[in-house]
Image (cartoon, rainbow, N blue to C red; front, side):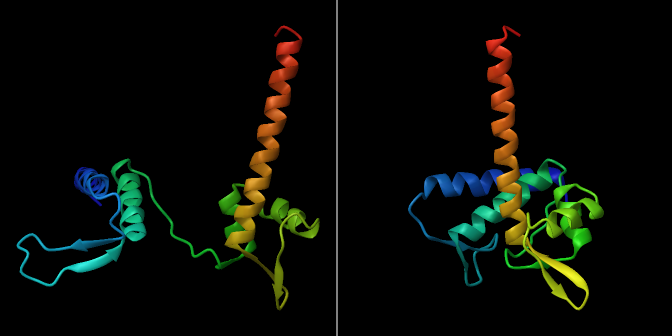
Amino acid sequence: MDAEMAGRAVRRIKDYLMRSPGQETIRVVGEHGAEDPLVLPREAVSLLAFILAQAAGGRGVTVVPSHAELTTQQAADMLNVSRPYLIKLLEEGEIPFRLVGKHRRVTYEDLQEYKRRDDAKRRTAADELAALGQGLGI
C-alpha cells in the first residue's frame, strides 16, 4: 500500500469523523457520486482509519476475530515468547486452553486477557521499583 496515499486517506476520514461526531453511519460515495452510496457503521470507518494510519507509518496490521483459536506457535508469536515458555504458561493455568486431539488451542480473547494481567503486573513492579529508588535517593 502506498504510504502517502494511506496518509491522505486517513486525514480525510478523521476530518470527516470530527465534523460529524453524532453520526452513527457513514455514507461513502465514489468520486463522481453517480452510484448508490455504501453505508458503513462508524466503528468500521474508525477501524479503517486506524489501519490506514498504520500503513502510512509503514507498519503492518493483523485483524483477528476475538473468538479465534490460535495454535501454540501463533499464541507464542503474539506474546513474543518461545513456544515452550507459552506451553509452560498453559500447563500452569495462566492461560486457558483446550485440546483438539493432542494439540492445544488458545482463544485470542484469553491470550489478550493474560497480556492485560501481565502488563498490569509489570507496571506495578516498575512503580514499586521506582518508589523504592526514590526512597533510597537514587
